[in-house]
Image (cartoon, rainbow, N blue to C red):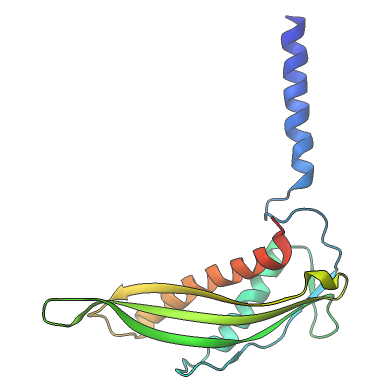
Length: 168
């Protein structure tokens, strides 16, 4: 009985002590920064969808604010995110027997430059891309594009967060 109590106490202590290395956002270790800035991501894609540049910039700001305790600043941030939307395209993915698109894919690519003024070895420049498939009979109107762009930006911003701060 004494051994069972000892094992139970050891198991509980080990479980709670291991949580000290990770937080619920997935970032490991201590972030040695207090502020971040997200510069405006210009839309340089060949096909322009109005407003997605502002929408992406705000989505990245919101994600970092919600998953860290960093403060958003407009300049001189410890962490700086900047870049541009480099690709926005809709391509047919599958065809029907009469050569009509059965499914289309919206793909967005964003080039990101990340600078950590506290630890320059963390700096990177990298492209992030994701897609959303929708029926070929549907026109790419706001009813389709709204959820598609939101889904794509959720994935891309999370990938940027993981690359810059999660350090798995």
